[in-house]
Image (cartoon, rainbow, N blue to C red; front, side, top):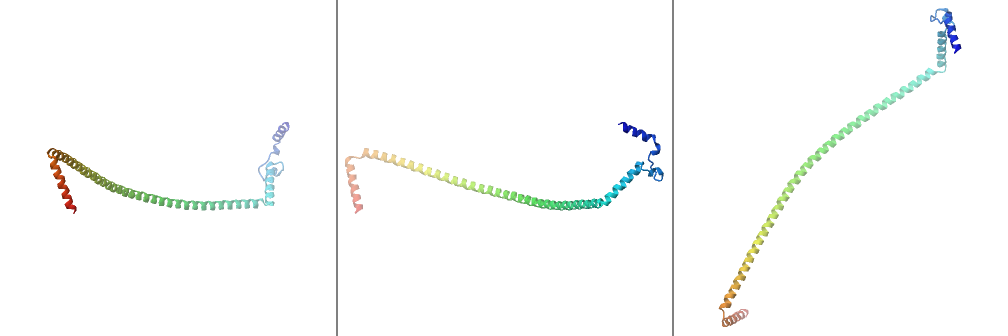
Length: 190
């Protein structure tokens, strides 16, 4: 630390050693001038870079990098065009699917209407059959009731006739009727 303070004090004490920025002055060409030393170091650095071909290598690397960027841009353009074509394809397919969905809905409505009409016709046929069946049952029940009434009337009439005949018929009249019936049957059989 003491050395640094001494160096700063020495530099401040000697104004003749201060660097001159004017290249036409004699003080500029002194090696004590830091500007000249920095300029010489820079020129030497540039000369070494040129000697070892660093600018060419940098230019080559930049060209490669530019070519890489160019190829990436071309690839990006190709991908963008491919993406646009895929998007257009999906949009076409979407429209086709929408058209198909609309057609399916229309056909479903038509089928539903046809099914409703068929169901109405089937119900009407079923109702007609049931009405006919009910009418047949009514007629059958009516015929059965009429037969039952007739059978009951015949039974009552036969019973009444038997009662009347049994009260009015004598044994002699009964024997005469039996003989007449046997004779009639015999005549009809021969």
